[in-house]
Length: 404
Image 1: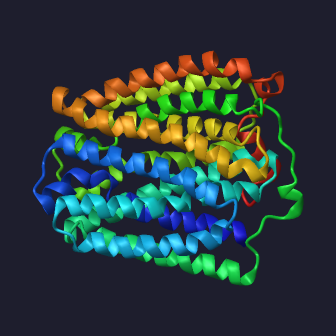
Image 2: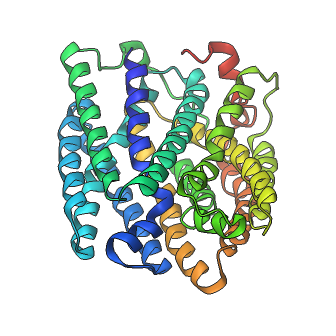
């Protein structure tokens, strides 16, 4: 029950936070009369920076306060600020209040390492896969709801939905705390590290650099994908654009099912990542095409590679720590992830302004190739032979099943 409720709470948060993501250019144009792509890129970069700086602070505070108790207070504050954003008409005030809202919303990311504390190490890849699908499908539903909101209402209504999601999260946390079932079991908490990466933290930093490049490349295409698709397809329909934007989420579910039933032997992670990253680069290049069917094919290939690489990299975050250090390790890795997203948010706006809507796809494809080259160079020195023989993400699914 505990794990299911926590994953459900994560899904609610992801859905609400994803509603506006594909439509920030339209939101700023309609609400504040700002049509500059650079402004959108700066806002998204500031949002990433805010979350990046806030999460380590929440992780440190969570050492003294139970994370679910902490979330009760932070999500109440986030909900109040969401309603405030709904009422604002001044862009500067919106920037200030929305960034404060993101500071409190960042605390829900503690749920990820919290769920990992509930799991034994041999089921980490399976749990990460399920969480990744939840995030992808949350993005699907969020993008669809955001498209409906823009087609039939005002973009600012999305902030009311965000506030409702905060209320739901508070209710779930209160329920779990009052029932007293919110603490990991003793045998899981006492689990020893796998020692696949040297516990000095050196491996986390090297892994973080790889993740920085990967997330920079993956997120580079997000802010202006909808505008690119509408230009290529000639279909200016927010709901349809949201559906195309969310194709990688549907592909992620197929990838999860395939991982669960595939009978593959574990190999060297660098080799699998290299193949997947090249596949993702091909998908990115196809999305730069002026032909709508080719864009759709590229979207599918990109979605498959995105899911598989994300699972493999995030398994490594928890490979060297203990359950008590998961939040700290995750917050460190999350800094590098958000540096990548932050850089992508800024670069997307400036790149589109200078070279057009298709240019981020070419830059992102180069980034995927660079990631494939960086992985063995940075991580091979800190990976032990055991890591080289790490089971594929399909193995925990076969051993433990999706219900774990």
